[in-house]
Length: 275
Image (cartoon, rainbow, N blue to C red; front, side):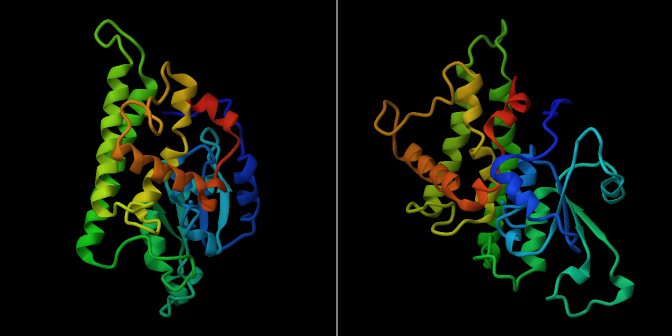
């Protein structure tokens, strides 16, 4: 979904304070857009990019999708965000730096950047590791990270962009398809740890980080779609343990400080998600 050409140029609200705090030049540079859910993954460890990285010094550069800076295009010719500019000297834990290898190194794709920061800055005090150390459990987490990318996000957009037609007259079809995807994810959370609130239990993981930007945008369905998101509230008809686990997880996401800090004012998102 391409952002509108009259997109507000900069972050607002809590996100503006986060951006303003990261304007000082640093060897580690994050190119991102306030409007981009993939970009907020990275400030979630730099949120999905600012919760682990918040304790790592970095510079934030806001990208206008219709006027991309040449410095970004040199790093990533497609000009996509988020893109991370990394210099090995920015990592004090790297003991093998030398001038010859101190060139700037670009990385992109939000999940790739999140995992890279975990590996490149293991000594930084930014909270528990976002992936398990056990190779099997780490691989299982990556299965559900892929689920978010290949199943949840496409279903989110099919529901949001749905327009009635002769062959698909009812919005209930994409809504129920989306519900099924959500329930599959919530079932998996219960299998991993029924106590929650996060996917793996008491601590946020990379799986949570992948899905968090979309969880805080679920309100767009209530704004734009007849019948809204349609998930039963506690005690309503259709409520069960699966929906209870989902509500618990969403509440944890919405209550997390590092997630709130990446959000702009709600009205700024309306032109982006208008079907």
